[in-house]
Length: 95
Image (cartoon, one colour):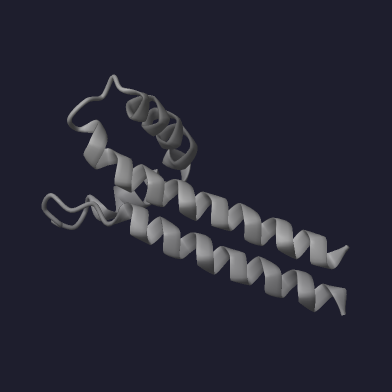
């Protein structure tokens, strides 16, 4: 049972990280044609990842980073940290 819970957390974190990477990659394609099928996929990915990215975007708005948006990278790091913490807590209480 513990193994299933740990795998589910890892899978969810991996899917969120993949969604962030896909959103970043598609942002370049959508800039040229927002009404394409890639644009529709991009909009879905934005709706999924925005609740995770927005706190980091607000944090990064205090710093002048120019045209580069580091908030998806910070969100990805935060996802990995939360994943590791949750797995350690689950394993600690399991044994």
